[in-house]
Each structure stands twice: as structure tokens, then as C-alpha cells.
Length: 461
Image 1: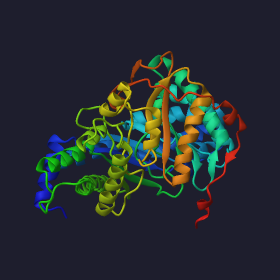
Image 2: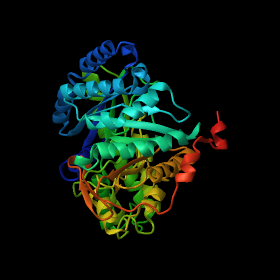
Image 3: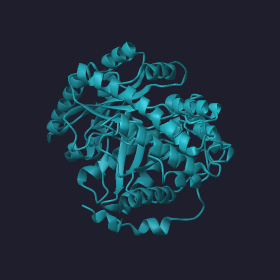
Image 4: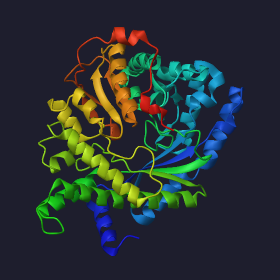
């Protein structure tokens, strides 16, 4: 139970520190909708999703109003479409994607995730069909998100899939060139993707998950920053000793505890009202472009001139670890990604550092060795070769594979634009300056294809 003091502290977080529940995501399994008849399959899918999602938005709003805690996004995740729609080929995949988009709009949710394929060890027919369909599917729909898992610590890296995704990312960008390549903002390439992610663009419902479930994603980078600022303002810890990084880590941990309790409270009540099981609370620090709701500002609070300065990776490691420790103490149902996001366009402070040149693609890659996701929402020149994009993906997948962690790549080659120019996506997606990619040619390496084998520690069982 929260003490009276903690309740008051939480209310202050709501009023002045951008605390919210970033997403309540309804997971819906589509395995019992399968049919070789595409018309019957689509009818089954629409019936099941809309039956369970009909009250989702209303209930989230009612619970948010009850506690005075806004639920910013309401979302749906479904079983990997590459599996459940395997018989239908690329054109059929596009039809399924449009049907899912119709479901999202009718249910009133912000996004629907699960237009996904898991290809870390090889391709099935449905996987190839879905990946081939990506350019048309993502540019003729508004609310569908796609994730492709190309690597795992258990299976290694499917370099054929990496090469293919380098090409498809370019094609998705070109297909949505009139909107700055925004289709790529809805497409992410993963290593070690969790099965219960509530955050987009990676959300999907895994094979081992319940038939229908509520997962919640909390946020709160502004809350963490204000807590650190208060502690530094006091100058001493509870024992009256000068404040150190150990004390700051404790502040972050305690704050993450409170934020997680709030998210789990909202999620469990929504699940109860919908008569569904509660799944996980993903306690990732998810920023927005709003000032004061930034992960990047936390780095300045602990003494760096900006995110990207020497010491950045160390601060991120401390932040990520303390968030996980606090969340794990607050809930027995922590899942998803759970840590700190560093999406460039979606965080005003990170975007400013990237625009000024203080934060490079290489530094962002180094930071992903200790954070929860990877290279996220990064605008790159539109003429970046597909093999260069594939090389960037391969590097990020290697970090995830070797370190038994989730990593991902969501880059946007902006058609017709080059380094230093700016692209704006609007809303939570924000804006970003286009940053340079590392020089050099990866084409010979990418053309070799095959699979990079899993590390020896994959044999643990």
C-alpha cells in the first residue's frame, strides 16, 4: 500500500511532472480465426477484435477520470499476421492489413500492432509474403504497426532477413515519400523481441500469451527528472551526507516504484472492468516531444552538458538498471521492454543533441548496449543505400544477440532530403534533423547472406 505521503507525491507527479499511463494495450489472439478462405478469415478477425475492443476506449477513459490519471493511448496487439495469414500471399497480406486498420478505426484505438514476422532462423511462406507486402500495407493504412524479428540469442542473426529489411525499409520510405517516409515510423526490426510488448511499433501478442489480455505501458521521464532535481537541490542524502550517484540511483529506483504502481493500478482496473486477465506492466521511460517529458533532460540533471557528452552511456546504464529495480519491486507482473527509450524524434532534448551534432549514430549505437530498445526514430538521408541500412541493422542485432537483450532499429531514410535538413512527423512522433550515417561500404558483407551463428552461451538450458 502507498503511504499518505506517497499518495500526495503521486498527485504532484500528475499535476506538474507529466506522469501518465502511456498506453493500455488489448492483446487479442487470432489463432482461432484462421481459415484458408480470406473472406472468412477477415470476417473472423473483425468479429473477434471488435467484440473484445468495443468498450476498451470508454473503459480506459472512465478509469483515467476516476483516478485523475490520463491514459494517453489505447492500442491493440494481435498474433503475428505472418503466421495466422500465411496462406494468402503478398496481396492477401495487404487486404488483411487494411481490414485490421478498419478494426482499429472502428474501435477508436490509436494503433494496432502485430503485422509482424519472426524470422530469426529462416523464412516461412507467410513471412516472405508479409515482408513483401510492407510498402503497400504500411502506406495505405493509418494505424497499423509492423515488427520483424530477425535475430535472437538462441538462433543467431538471419542475415538474409537483415539484407531484405534494408531493401524494404527503403521501399517503405519511398512509398510514403509525400509524408517524409513516415511509413518507416511504423516499422521496426528486432532482436529478441518480447511477446508482450504494449508499446508501438513493436507490439504483438506472442504464441504463449492468453487468448485476450490487457497489458499496460507506463511512462514518467519527467517524474524521474524532477525527483533527481529535488534530491540535488537538497544536496544531502537521508543521513545528511553529501549526495552521490549511489543516492541518485536510489532516487530513480524509488520513483520508478511509484510510477509502476500507478500503471499497474490502472491496468488491473481496466482488465477487471472488461472481465479480462491483466498481463504485464511495461515500465519503460517513454518520452514525448513536450518539454519536461524528456529522457534526455535526465542526463543534464545529473551533470552532463547534454546527452551525448562523455559519460552518457554510464548514466544510461544507471538509469536503466534503477528503473528495472524499482519496477520489479513494485510489481510481480513486469514485462515488455521495461527500461529507458531513446527515440530521437520523440524526445525534444535528444533531438536537439542530434541536431547540434553532439549525438551521433555511432554514440546512439553504443548507448543501446545498456538501454531497452535500440536505434529508434532516427532520420537518415533518403539516398542511404539499402546495404548500409542492412549493416546498421546487423550491428544492432549483434548487440542484442551477444548481450541477451532486446535491441531494435527504427530508422527513416527521408526521401529527397540530406544531412542537416529536417523532417516533421507530428504528434508523438515529433520531428528530427537528418543525421549522417557512418561512411564505408557494407555491400560485400551483406551479399554473403546466410546466418551469423548464435553465441556459445545460447546453449544454456
